[in-house]
Image (cartoon, rainbow, N blue to C red; front, side, top):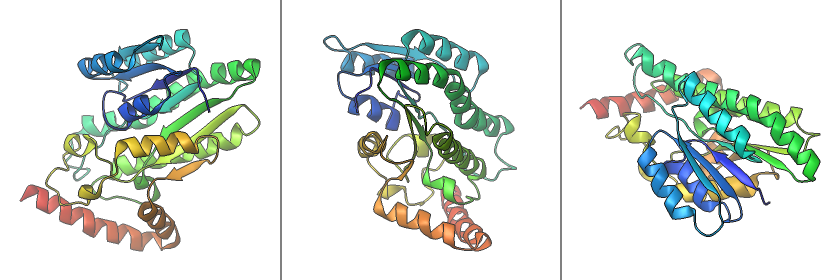
Length: 265
């Protein structure tokens, strides 16, 4: 499925960078993230030949950053929007800095909501006019399927993204716009370090390769609405939806609390 130009948030590393590298050279790129140096290096690596690659360093946790990105995107006219930017904060909700909890919501919830609402009308109109299809990917997580004590806000934001993607897929069923909720499990990115999970003993050593996550996400777009990456992750996501919610909460609390104690040791 060919797209003319993709807007990728959180593109300076991890899954976002993997998406940029996985897309064909015929797809132009508008890459955004907070690390301008890494964005520039990625632009230089990918912007060869006639390929169009633009970058914009922006803080999607702020109104100004989101507005700047929307302005750049309206000029670029993407037909693929990948809402990938996200962050977490591991620890007790009442101990985590209030600002960190709010920023998590701004980046993980408000940014994909605002960007999707601003850009989807134009994407759909251009797709109708050209006879092609546009695409929207929201990078959620397996955390969306159950409560995660000590990552409570993060799991809640990912549940929002999953629900938003599935709802939009229903609303846009008659439009030339494909929508995908991409739900990877632990992935080998800088997320764990940034979230304060290093040394926690949680199962991050079995993390997925971000390149594999990106490739599977692109392959699933237009073919399904929700993709959980990895056989074990799919089995776990299906299981927790069948178990009593209270049992799931108690079980995840034990696992997450053990990880928190080992990190603090």
